Image (cartoon, rainbow, N blue to C red; front, side):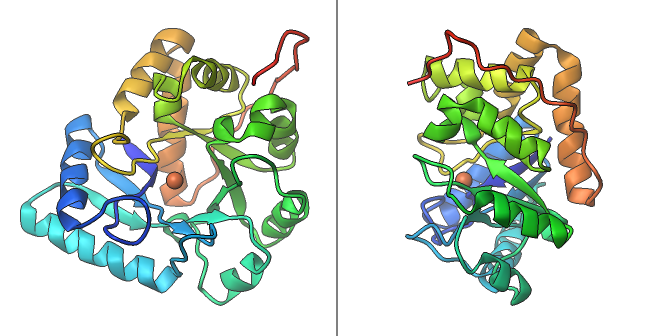
Length: 253
Ligand SMILES: [Fe+2]
């Protein structure tokens, strides 16, 4: 399996604290059957800035440590980027980067709302040949209350990534139900761990795929796995027509 969103790099955000924890996380990833993961430290989220060069160097160091330990995991460079005003400029200056330098860029919204400039930013990214992937839409309050807003962004060319722990129920029944609905109605294109540590937020990717397979069928899971493979090869991913309908009974919060 490939995991496209994780905080495995030690000491640069709220993920792994030190190399020891990174190694423990890497072992856990391999145990689940993950062979490749993209390290996506937070960038420009108000608390952490991790310029691209720092990420690439840190990923190199982690890979060296994994080799030394004989752990069969390949770590690739990425960032989880908040919507911020200098993003386009920083992409040009190599301060911000995409997932494994492919056209796919992982974008995080603040917890409460969708930033006003999102649609114009996504348009600019598309003009640059990039594809925004919205990280964990199921955990953004505005999107959770109005999944049709996510559908709109997807119809405009964005993709979305749901967190394995949301599907597994770690964030509660409501988020679990919403995540399954989003998967069912093609408002998700990737499942990823967003792993931060071993104690509370490890991977859970195998478990999420198993649950999705039972609930929504194996074909959907195959599609998610293939999309992650296509992503790291920089190829176009499968994005079926989204089919969300806001229901009268749908009140999330
Ligand atoms: Fe994350």
